[in-house]
Image 1: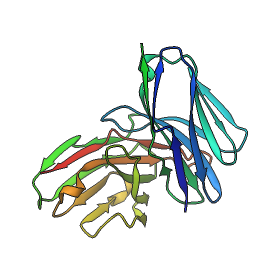
Image 2: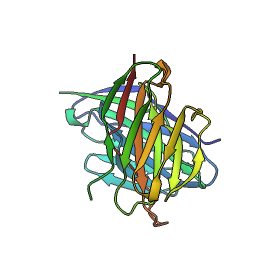
Image 3: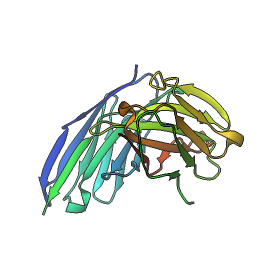
Image 4: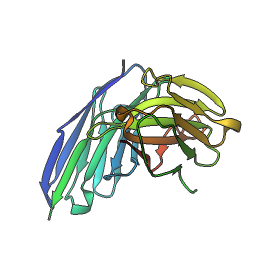
Length: 109
Length: 115
């Protein structure tokens, strides 16, 4: 059974204080690892898809990396508007996405 | 591209009543998914359509839940005889038929409160 564990559950950063969020996973035949951002009361917003170990993708202050067992979402010099819940999900074979519980990020000015 | 559209955004209903949610996927996306999310949890898969065919249902989808996708376009999710435990956000998502692009895009969700 595909599983995703995200850590930490919650993270509080000062503005400009860089950090990383972790997503550990087990999956049969990885088709993709996905990162989403979710604001309170809204649906998940797509950020990145990673397909194979060693792959990296960047978008503004965010950079996602992938190994065979985990993915990291690095946040460089965060701003208060980066505050949100970040969700990690995996897709294996023809199965639907399996999500972790998310990391709640708060960036304080 | 207008994104995935869900209606209504919020619904408050009394226990025992039936509710129906509608989802309009991104145009040309042939795959459509329903997920459920409760506070502090990630989305949980409920069911999946490819065109009009319902290909997979989670064991979370009790007999009170039914989903349809007539003509492979919009989809509806009906919950009969609602219970307080059904209170959650119901998320619809869609993805492209292109095998090189399997990203799933979500709508804004439909909040259900059962009182």
